[in-house]
Amino acid sequence: MRFLQLQRRFRSFAARTRQRAQGTVEYGLVVAAGAMLALLAYTLFSPIVRAVATQVTGLLPSFR
Image 1 (cartoon, rainbow, N blue to C red):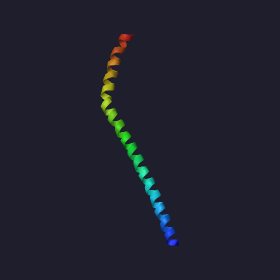
Image 2 (image 1 turned 45 degrees about the horizontal axis):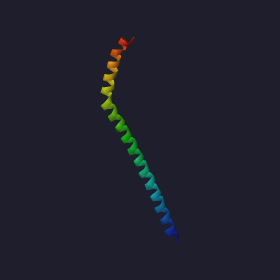
Image 3 (image 1 turned 45 degrees about the vertical axis):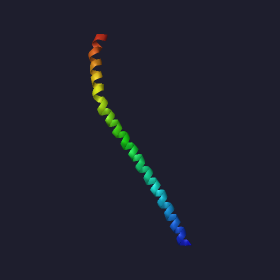
């Protein structure tokens, strides 16, 4: 009887630990995916933003 209680406790502990570990891994994957998406967006749009900034800078003297 005592062994069965100990076995249930261990299984419960293992299940909770597994769930926590899975949650941590999922959170890490979301963070990594967000970072990769931000990097991709930066590399894709950075040349466009620089070109627009150069054009706007060139046009600024004509507005004065």
